[in-house]
Image (cartoon, rainbow over all chains, first blue to last red; front, side, top):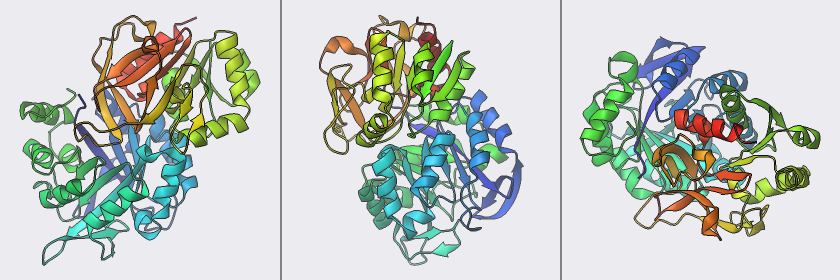
Length: 252
Length: 204
């Protein structure tokens, strides 16, 4: 039976790993290779690496750096940040990425989803959706690391991404991100219910029960988290053991 | 020992090279017929669409070179993910396209039987009967990493080496003589995956 994945997320900005609160107040947390080696030893299920300054700085992914990270990464790796063309995707996959996460380009030029899926298959196209709660209810999709509102509804955007050939969705609540007070269950549930591709919940995990809630209440397929692993003593193995206790099928 | 890892511009080739190194092999990332002719083992990796991939194998004149070594000379051959699917008689992703046809069967899309999400992404059981040396020292039911939407339907049940419980169960490893294919990614499956690669490299 398929296991529910627990996915640590590494955010990269200005030459190092960072973690912020609500996509702001970034704190430095060390080197990438060092972090990857630790996760290798812990045999985590999968890793997501996002270069959150690439799009804002108008530059492509740093292929050389990613090649080095991937060489040290013996677990499935999803890489995002700054992807604008199918050629960018080709280079990332050749460097050792298993999947790519497309966020801003999926809004600006949605054809990139279709074109990438056509060449490399849907299974390697993760569309990353960052959303903020609207004051009056519902959510809005933001791009450029949360800097730019799009007016799009995340559920509609998710359906579009699936119809264009996305193989997976990474759904992050900007409001909840880094606060370690739980996922935005309403957002995760709305998106999960709207598509039949896997949905990774992201943003807000602070304790093991939060992961359980994302799966059992939010109907997420997988859970991603960063701050809890950087700023608390909690390890991925402890969270997985807790989730298994709660009746979720985990690889422990 | 020289392991030719075939580079036809599709997918996670670098990970395969790194994994072979970690398992004690000497990988050569190549699309040259000469390297393939000198190899002791051949790995055909791949992520992507069947039609696009077969077209690339043909346009790079790799099909003949691979056939000569794997079928003619009996060099151990391992296809991974899309590389496994190419072994089939035909694929249906991006239109019906002939495959290498080394192991009879066809590649079709996974169909949910119980609300399963497609693609099949993540860690799942690989169940085998321990008959094949490919799974030596790997208990049946061990988790391997999958990321795919299509699967290999064997025409002869004897060619199926392992199966995985998703969408009613699908064939997750095939083998006939010196030719093997795995739907999962051993290069990303940590300890069990590296054991499988070592088992493959130990074949002569």
